[in-house]
Image: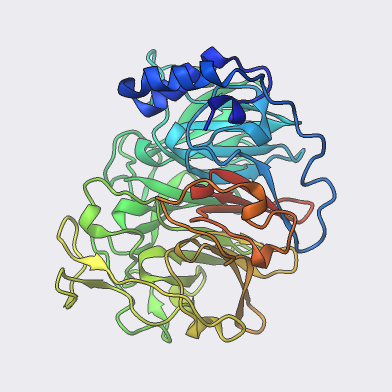
Length: 461
């Protein structure tokens, strides 16, 4: 494929060649250069029409991303952009779209039709060279290297980890929380530093430690809840600056132990956010959170157990609201085995089924991010089923709202053209490929990080 076909307007052949070489490796540099030079074509013009402009209710479009995996520079048209496994998406108070470009280790902003990096550098890493993000005034966000940023939210109230209007960035491989001020354009570390477990029942300080936190939510009182993924815990950074474990057993991953229909005390509950055999270097940033408006109930995507679980923060109990069938771990022979860190016992495989029926009886496959639909349904990425599904909490039923259409999926699938993945059609007939993140904006639009399609999709709910 000629490289210029997917370059953004205004981007030179030389830029595309350099970026392609960086993505493909030195050995591919000459071939990439010749392909671009021999193509002899001009930079593509912006699309004549915005494919999302006249979107009908229940339909889907591609808002950003060409489907090409990689990074092709900055300030190009959103529909021509190269991405590399976008993991999360959010919008600010004005409706501006932000994306965590996971394998590009950057946060990107889509303003108008242009996409640009607002946090991150050209290499993965952990902070800025002058450590300014730990000092008063913070750092220039374009000097701060990230390592697989997984989650973003814009704070609606002041909290110890982010002030109102700031972006709270949960940086997975960096084991810490950062706050970016879009007005001052400065970024600071607000909690956490080195990986580990520490600081429970204490005020935030040097002793506070997390181990690959993957997702976070905040309530109206300024409390922040996070999936402390590699510690197998749900933890809370209180508005009072106290850090506490809310649910889970530190160092003890596991299944639901046949207690799906029971209320399990939060201290006894076990989660399986990822494959514990990969504990030393997890491949997958699992888990997901959604909080009710009154701040009394927290919903959790228990990814490796293929369940959505509910934490009653008042009663201190955990129940299952969606998912059935196999959970917990098996050994390499397929026999039941205890889930243990760095032991070759893997989560059981999930499945698909149950749409239109009780969510508790449905089969799920690695659920991740959660969000609220305008009608009160709980949405989640059923990521390995390539779908976005919804749980009606009033009836207990489950349904697909996007995805499940034809087309090859998985990490080896080749990029498909927009008309081959269901764009402008019904969302329930579209092809998603391992969606990892979702967000519902104030206008009621559903945004999907269609991760392996390397696109941002939009659904009018």
